[in-house]
Image (cartoon, rainbow, N blue to C red; front, side, top):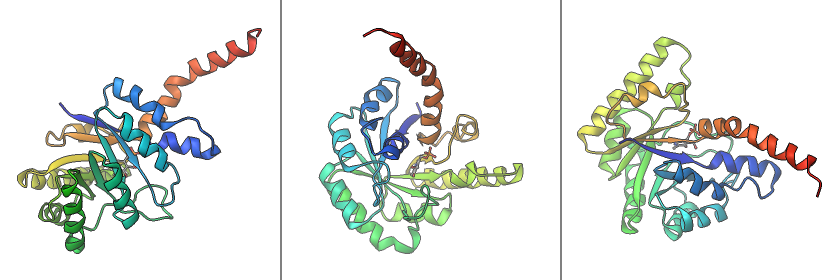
Length: 240
Ligand code: PXP
């Protein structure tokens, strides 16, 4: 069975827009797990623009499936991850000015650093996933540095503007998957996947895990909005 990881950052983004306490991404965890998610994904960014340290600490206490922490491999984040001990860390590149993670890691040119990070996490019994573009050099380098899993970025695929671009991007993903399979790497995919564009990616058998955030939280706004309005309408019409 294919696995779904649900990324909570977009719930935290709504909360941080008002710097208030709701919606609390931590409160969503049990509901998301009850609905069948296989893991909870959170990205603690250096600028703390959405997920906060307290979210991660509380999540570690209540997640019953698996906790996957997305993080840049900085000293600060490595220390936090080794303290909190998520089940998996997904290493991602991070730039302060980006809206969301742009592109995958440059593993091939930084093999010694990645080996060092991965050793630290393995010593703490934490699975390591590397978020990379569908590029054969990066897949092979991820294997050489000892990653357990690669998460193939579907960003370029999801941003395809023409049928030809889409085809090229799918083929690159397929090629990366074939190489990763031969190297016995676990294979996940994520970034920009939606209810409308995910089908060709689901058809790639060897991808066994999908990490999705924005599209699910965006849909939840609409699937939940009618009862939310009804509740408020009832409230303002009820005599206290
Ligand atoms: N996987 C990784 C490594 C990411 O950085 C993100 C974005 O936080 C996702 C998956 C989820 O992307 P989206 O929110 O576009 O579904």
